[in-house]
Length: 336
Image (cartoon, rainbow, N blue to C red; front, top):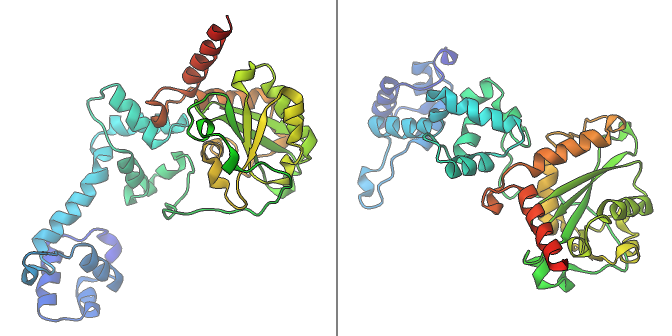
């Protein structure tokens, strides 16, 4: 019967408060309300009133419990009360924007009704949001939120590398344009060895994606050279890699067009967080289940165009393309 009433009512909360005051066991309260015992335990934990100044007043009180519940509901209820807001958020999520990008752009455009990025996430993972699979529109489209602080480590090794500890501060601090981060995106083993190189400029967050037929280092590095060579030298000064063996031919970059190479510490891919974050966005269009043999350069360029035309919070809600073009213009003016 509990399924008929997914949310506890004020009357039920009054009964819980009365029976708990009478020292009634939780199991018996659950039986009387035709609820699961876990529901009652969760209710007592979530809506327990705590008074630091007057500890004697601490406890479970029906009215305060109802108010706490309603405040939590109100956090994501704005997405329900204003269907036009929900539709606008959903359209931009489908276009590849993150919740933070949506909120920042709304603030920049002075929308009359706004939400926080956390409200969007909470709605997506709320009972209402899950009922319509709203989470599928999020960048990672996970059914459940991943715990904060989660990190995935990879074991790789490379010799004769240049550690990030030697990388100039102007590069590490993003004070100078023309420094890139690089990574490979893999697909399921049954689809073969085809993979995708993701390349991101650190200042502008401008992304470039290229298809590779295998993980051999020399062809991958040659593709990097061909992709970056048309840019002026000041726009392709260095590339930061992880220690994957697919980047072992890094010295070819120096020979090809004079670019320096830097490498993350072992098992520390977070040190190239710009490209790692870009990969998360790319996975919306290139999930691991993608059949890579069907990937065309035209399709990959369309993905990049979409990413590069999406406003970023870290750029003051300007787009990577706008910043990238502005930096190239400055270089051209200096050379003129």
